[in-house]
Image 1 (cartoon, rainbow, N blue to C red):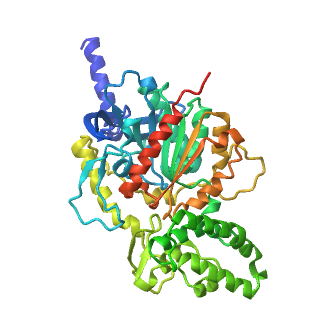
Image 2 (image 1 turned 90 degrees about the vertical axis):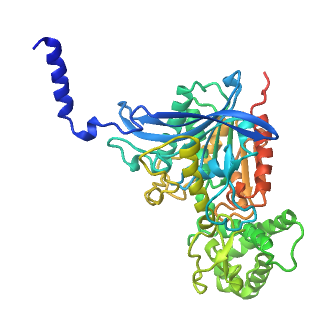
Image 3 (image 1 turned 180 degrees about the vertical axis):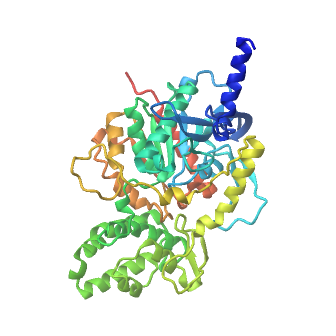
Length: 509
């Protein structure tokens, strides 16, 4: 046997001796995948041709070993002469444990699934997937990211979910994906934006600081339905702040369901009145606690009833403290209904009319079937992407195992743990990059991330006066998912159009 054939035989024997798991590479492999397709979307009457990339990037540890496969779908406008002048936006949803399907198939992607704008339950399949005239490809290329444990994204090798399922772990992995993406596709010099919804806004605040510390300078951060400090939304004993900050949302929802008498004609003017009451009088009453006199408590309960549609007796029995679950169940109880949480425009029958707490997610139950069917159909039929893995729309295991500890950039040694808060991260990002623009979008009827809680949180940014003009806040007559109403989606698109123009404008010498 000559030397050549001996080496071939030896190589065959060595490979054959390996365990099958090490010899066989999965379809998505350590090199990642990139399935290319083409399409067109009409925006403002103008057809825009685009190239879609559905694929994976592989994250590696310091030793170069693969630790995660991250699935994404990217859309690039065709015919762009200079990609360095073309903005690119990295978009994701929240959870934690949610894929990007909601933004992708409902909000800003080139195709969207049709659901009723009036918050009615969509009928069963078949669902319509149509051209999205409010897609943002007219202004920016888009990359939808599914964090590890969602979509098709998953750990590799010896890595486990624990390495990715936490505030700081998540920021690091998503940040590494973005760095790798702009390197692979030569987009380092493009104007860069991050766009997150719900917990994705929490991710964005910390991610902006992380990316800029790695040299990835951002032009803009776009927040949809924000939560930046969980103290503002956590109904826990001893924390009265959420009761104050949720009150304007209760009032807005009562207005929407015609539960107020007399019924205010101008919602923003009415809410301004409620906000003043919440901060000037209601907060003082809660601060007084048991020291509040019976007469003052009765007067306060009567005013709360007038603003929210709940009875004064209910407010008295609740000791002037009604949390979001209780409000959802009580507001329409006389009609045998309860409202949604993320979008309280939605209402459906109560499973148990006696229970004081909500029993199921009214809004999510209404729309999840349509979005699930849409993404499954779209991935395989339109984007031609197939996988042996199941596409995880929502992964409850991620949220159950989430590590909420976060190292603040301003945290002192010996600081005591408290509510997780990324306001300091956002503040640092905006101060260290004084050109960074922030866009905040909130729905009036959202009990997951109430608009007044967001405004309170943003007021704690403590920005220098010149930078406060870089914060742009918009309100919409819808709930958490601003795109579930076509009028709100169109308004969001107009506001995004103006924001991209502002954040990419020349900043002078």
